[in-house]
Length: 87
Image (tube, rainbow, N blue to C red; front, side):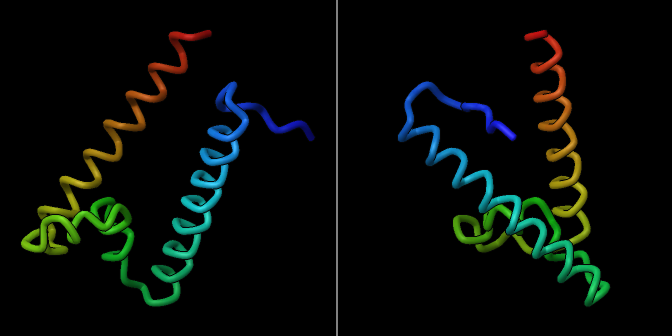
């Protein structure tokens, strides 16, 4: 299986692939943790990004979970529509 290049620069390409793999593993661990503990608060988009490190007042409440979910869906739609335009 051939792995596609993300960037023409080999160093940047390797770094981006490392970051992508780390993010996939991180989300996978969060999914397993959430299923095992039946607590999906760690699966909040803001929690995944560790936004609370910059904004400590941002607690894991229903409103932040909803905002994070909507933001995640909007980003997904943006990337999906952007990839369709390139075809």
